[in-house]
Length: 360
View 1 (cartoon, rainbow, N blue to C red):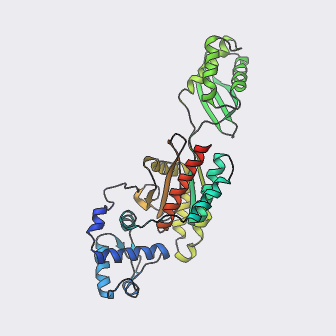
View 2: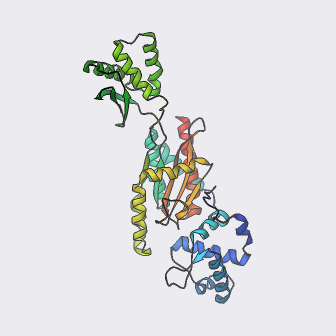
View 3: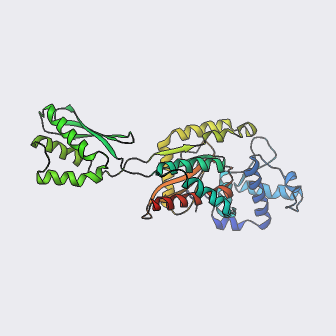
């Protein structure tokens, strides 16, 4: 279920090598950290009813866990918190993920079904909903798809070089430079642009391509020879381009600031905001979630983007009616997020989105 980016990540067999006492103490420390974000000491652990051990015995186990790289002492605190390695071991081997309650499932389905008929409306609602449920920032990578076109224009740049501009009904703009015959008159560029605009308006490039090429081949296009060559050159330049770059929807960034005053993590959150602003990098990370089924978890410096921000991404892919993965949905927050609660939320939301896409 989870991403294992390097050989340094602990395996389930390593989890099994811990004694029952070590696992109980390690689990308690991690769960306390995920709940409070604060280090916990042996005396506090000994006072908890779940551990019938003396502070001295607990200190010895904590020392062994620290030596193994699973715990660390922040600053000069006597308490311990899990390292990134420790969090990975916990998530992969000790995390107990439950199922969502029936009312929670109905709530997710109801919010997404009521968010409108357009897929973008569903995805934006899903991102905002996950942000609210997780108290993190919600993320959605939208499907790669051709825009419905509104306008095509040819602009001469230099002898034998012409810029082709395609404007989508959603406001997107794509440009290509094509090689063209020398000395074309201005009327040829206008004629070619008007021809393509008339036939592509309200359709995608792929929907209109075969018809236009057919007209050019059978000479049914109402174009002179030069304009027809210009149109053919433009279509050839776009040959094989069937989709635009995926876009990223982010909702709920302000939620990442809600507990900063209590934990003193302002610098971490500032770095996280900088990371989110670099959307292309974040999209590349989320695209990794497409490579497997179910939820993927990326923790801290396991990935290049979050090496400084101490953050985690929990994401799952969603599919179209052909069961082809087309996008990713998830959340981003501090490494001490409530994994047991968020993982099933992200997983079920991705499945609901897949089902809604199939129905459309």
